[in-house]
Length: 118
Image (cartoon, rainbow, N blue to C red; front, side, top):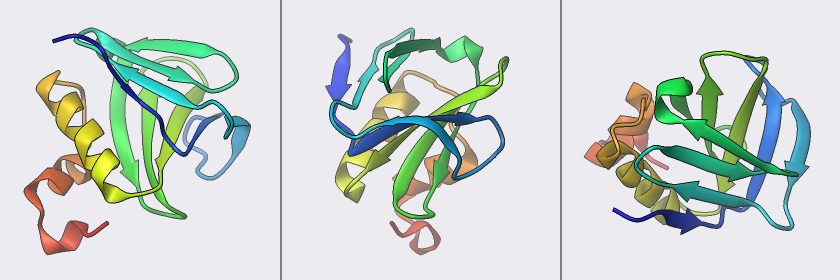
């Protein structure tokens, strides 16, 4: 499968494990590219993360709909925010097909259960 490109509402780089603290953000030109080997996130510059370098891809619904890419190593994480649930579901579905390390909450979005309402 070729690389798929998405345009999130915004992208952030933060301190790993510290929610809602952004060290940098990009609301003008955010970008997310998914391919079979990993993800590329544009915050202020491009960041490439292979799936085997990620501990988890977590869903967060505080203040919007966000996916956070948490590397196994390092002090930063990378978050993309989406305006609506449709693009978020599409991104999660592609990540699932690529066998990315999705959190149980992110996977539950695909089941459509009421407890995972976006």
